[in-house]
Length: 134
Image 1 (cartoon, helix red, strand yellow):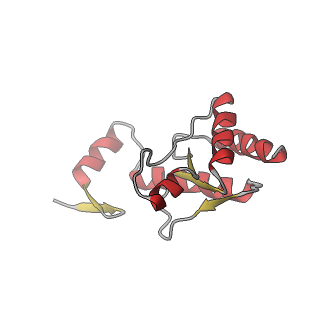
Image 2: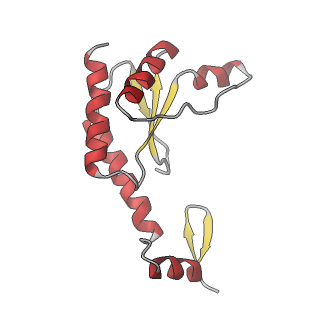
Image 3: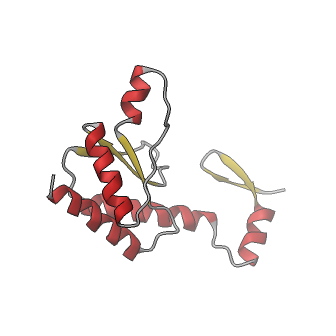
C-alpha cells in the first residue's frame, strides 16, 4: 500500500483516492488554503497590545493572538462574538502559574480552509476595528 505524509501523519493513498473521487479536495490543497488565509490575515492586521504567535513549521490552522493581559483578551473575545466570529480560549482550567498565564492571554481565531477570502477580510476588519478603540 502506498502512503503520503501530511505533517507527521501517514495517510493511505487509497483513502485519499476515495475522498478525491467523492469530490473532496486533496489534503495538500486544504492545508495550503488555510496557510494562505493565515498569511493574508497577518499581512493585513493592525495589532496593538497583542502579537501573533507564529509556529516554526507553519502548522497552525488559525491566528494565535497573545494579548498583554486577560482584560484585553476578554474584551476582544466579546467584540468578535458580537460580530458573529467565535474565537476559542485555548487550554482552559490550567493549574500551574505559567500555564494560567498563557491561558489568560491567548485567543485562537479559526482561519482554516473552510473560510473564504471574504470571510478572512471580514475577520481582519473586525479585529482592526477593535484596536482602533483601545
